Amino acid sequence: MTPAVYARPSAAVPLDLAKRDLPLTLGGRTFAVRAYLDGRAPDGPGWHAVIVEHRTPLDHGLVPTADPEACLAAAVRFLTAAVAADATDRGGEEAWESEGGALPARGMRGVAVPPGTEGRITP
Image (tube, rainbow, N blue to C red; front, side, top):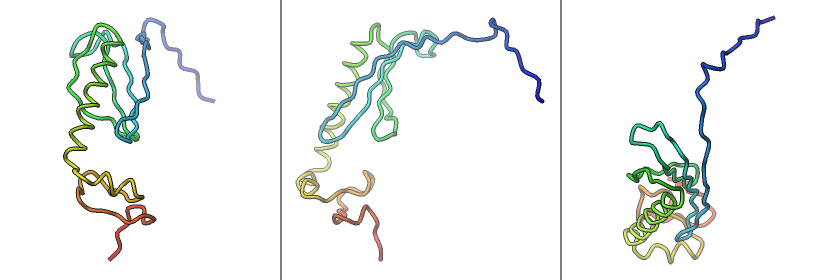
């Protein structure tokens, strides 16, 4: 048998797990926004935002705030501007998507994929 390992209570670093979650849908896209309290972050103590779309965290330059409501409000403003800019970049492609088509990836703007192909392009 393997002997048990005992960790001293003083060796453990306490975590403050205060957080607020906000599910959000903008422009047909679904996001999860989380504000969490971190008193030891390199960019300062306060509430920090994590924004996730389809399991992918989005990079943002939001600074820590003093309360969770301000943090979530800043994240919503960031997402609203990002979704509006993306819709402007894509032009009229939303109309085709609403008819059942899809874009295979954001890096492939202007490339339409017929319904039922799930993004597979075969020669």
